[in-house]
Length: 442
Figure 1 (cartoon, rainbow, N blue to C red):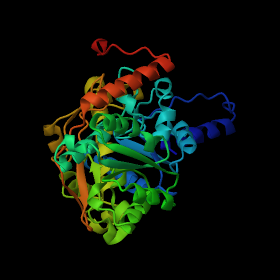
Figure 2: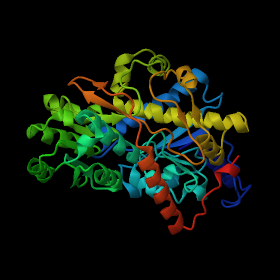
Figure 3: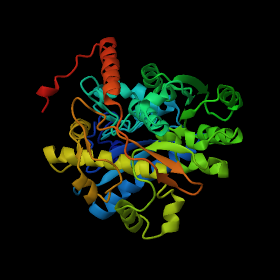
Figure 4: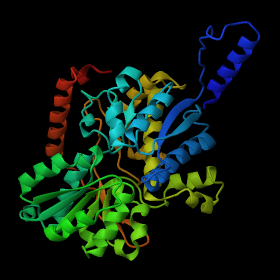
């Protein structure tokens, strides 16, 4: 529990005991001199292998800011974790517990994100579902309080199709090809289906949808269908133990692993290492740096681990999902810094941070200053566009490490943005939301 809460409760007990006030007479004014970020994490359960490194990366970057810089522009960052077990109901309970004074919330679950979106404008706590959640939230005119930059599932789905077209020789060569989508049977796993379906109609490939139920440990029937279907390419929208099981199953039927591509949540060390040699050649999407050779890693090693590389690696230092947690923390804290540029250096409210998220502009120069040169692409968020640029690249596992094996792939914005606006418009009608006039926003 945060220190100021403990102190207020202690003071209240003292005053009550002294007979100076009754137990219900005190309405404390909560003074807070630290920027509070609640952390919804899952360090236990079937998704822990993915949740742990992500949480570690996020926390280590906050520790770096406090140790090296004294916080954000001198304002210390405070955080508190709440274990969700990747369970939507528990995740919402965690949010309710920690929302007071929150700067921004990262649900780390599409299911939780869907539940929190209606709460955000009421509670004045912005949501950052980085590369997950409700894709339609990229339309900031409807979803004022939700952000999913730097990219979305629909953008990634279109980038995957674009990549396969390049590998086949041209987009025209997709006609008649068979693509299977092995997906987690949840809102998260179903997110790419509309885009892949539209693109199947446009380019003439055959799409086979294969759902895997939570948690994904039993997939024999799924891979029997894969063997019968004999796809040219497989896309996977998996998470947690589902990923490693799927990769093992693909290897067991001798599917060519360089034609098996996972979403960015299906491309970490914990997904491939359990499959051993069978995972070699497997690919996945990504949108940030691979490995620990960046300036930000040197700073974390120095200021957070006192140069102890073994201790750092014990906390997943440099792994794909650790790096994703770092990236997430960079986005959030730079949005807070952006808000301070408008409102002054001090503790930012959720409303002020929302403005910072919507006006975030991470240039190449700023990325270099943060030790992130070459780590990711520059990003500019606007009132209309809460997704940003949306590019991804493909990485490949060589049995020991991940390597970037493609250039940055821009999504098919003409297809994706039209879908986003259509879905956002439908959401607005269903929920009685009047779209914002972004030209009038300050």
